[in-house]
Length: 104
Image (tube, rainbow, N blue to C red; front, side, top):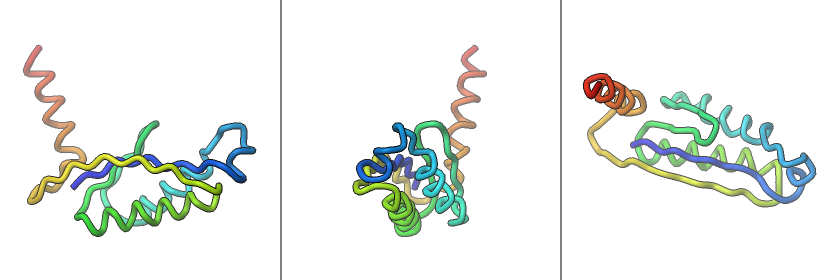
């Protein structure tokens, strides 16, 4: 499965940081990268690939890391649950790029 998520603190210490949450996001991304699961971070989301239990354990740990930066945490998730498939973190993009080339 692929899970794309965004996690950010609000309230408390984070509210005094002129709306910047990069330190909290960095803490979450560090947790993801330390997990060893295939992952990709862009300007809006971090996507992780793995099985249900391992992916959600990482999301939980990343959320807990962000909780240290504020009194509340906002978490947004989107999941693509496709049993039996791996390598979809890059495979989906490869198929998209091929379709774009073939269509031109």
